[in-house]
Amino acid sequence: MIIRSPIKYFKTSPEVIRLAVMLYVWFPLSLRNVEDLLHERGIDVSHETTRFWWNRFGPMFASEILRRRVQQLRAFSRWQWQVDEVFVKINGERHYLWRAVDHEGEVLESVVTKRRNKRAALKMLRKLMRRYGPPEVLVTDRFASYKAALRDLGCDDLQACGRWLNNRVENSHLPFRRRERAMQRFRRMRSLQKFVSVHSSVFNHFNQDRSLSKRDHFKRNRTAALAEWRGLCAA
Image 1 (cartoon, one colour):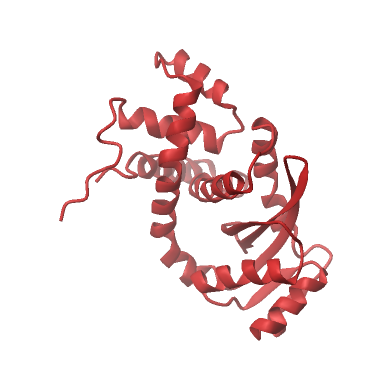
Image 2 (cartoon, one colour):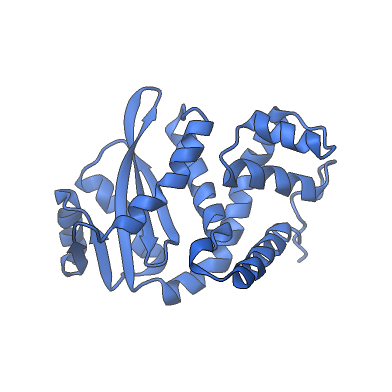
């Protein structure tokens, strides 16, 4: 059975759709900023069209990226995980964004909850371990709900706490914070969960650790990432 590309039936070129989605999700740009950048390239697309494209195709691109990487992550990313949470305002109400990264900064999971308690921590950790399996070390802060949740999972011996041990996951929140300011925050919990899931996959795909690699190596990885992006949903 031949699976046809979902972009094929749109009048706009698939390359333009992928470019618009990449600009909006990866860079801290508003919808109107993306419209202006596309117009400078001779592409006349309204900001509402960009909104429709990212809502329609963003999750498809993210799921395909995750599907291609999940086997590799299962094999190489179980040495050490770091988990942390930050608060996010939705219509003036405080919610919590939980995020897990591996020892190289690869975002493994992002979950939005209304509460910051043991039940929310269990939701995050169960979803994480169901997809990747248990890690060798799980780095957290000293928030008591982590210890209680890991005790229920029978993994309390995996926890490690330290003053600077979870710096990598703390820094992983920064790209999302830049996007949050550009989008002028969020209005629904569902849209926040959808965006952070897409943003995490796109961040993993294009993040090359520029400061840690030589110029030639970085350029090869960047070219390969762009080539793979242009081939998403192209069947």
